[in-house]
Length: 101
Image (cartoon, rainbow, N blue to C red):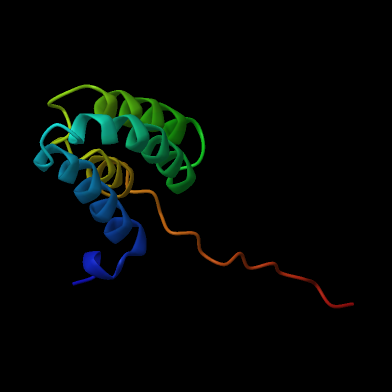
């Protein structure tokens, strides 16, 4: 399956899994979210540069810092938004034509 070979998708699944894992740690989990939220926001902005990445990083930070919202798969949703709904084409090599004299 092509989707499982996409590094950005796999990376997003991993970050979502780490974010959700803190829910399963009693008493310590919410404090780990304080450390995880800025890191997740930074990674989101690195994965999706530009205006969309900035907006998504703010949303990820808020989602990770608030209690009981860790189950939202932010990275996966951003991947779907970027590559399925908006259908951003993969960058193709640019062909430059040169006239010979």
